[in-house]
Image (tube, rainbow, N blue to C red):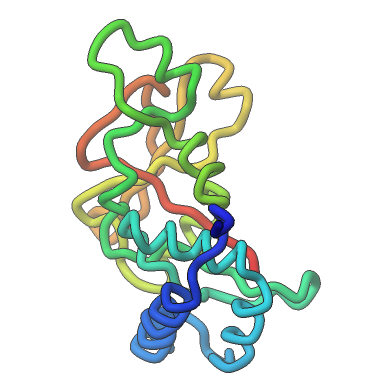
Length: 187
């Protein structure tokens, strides 16, 4: 029986083809990185490959954005033009989800990120992403919210409008069809 967090060989092969094509098409996102080194690292980390597949399945279009020399890890972000379709209409966390009296969403950002095996982007990472292109011009994405804001019932999200990155707040229990979340994965 296949481990739930491991892809079948043919699934791995297909995902690596997709990632390689995206890597080559968007070379501006990862100048000076070598696909073969990325591929070798991915193949030696099947659990991370599984997480990338989940990012892909939910519409994130993950791509390598940099290499962290201190940790010897490649960093992938969701690079879809808009917030990933399969991760929209979600409250911020389980507490917010359970606080809704009616019209509860099916899921929440924090639990989905944990299930996929990714980290929610921080404001700094979101700003870094926006240096690589223009993302969330029609949608918005929840970002990692400081505990002091979350404790008061709020959560943060970002988008890109008028050539500017905007950081906003909302009640953590809110959810919208055009708001999802982006993640980061270290491999």
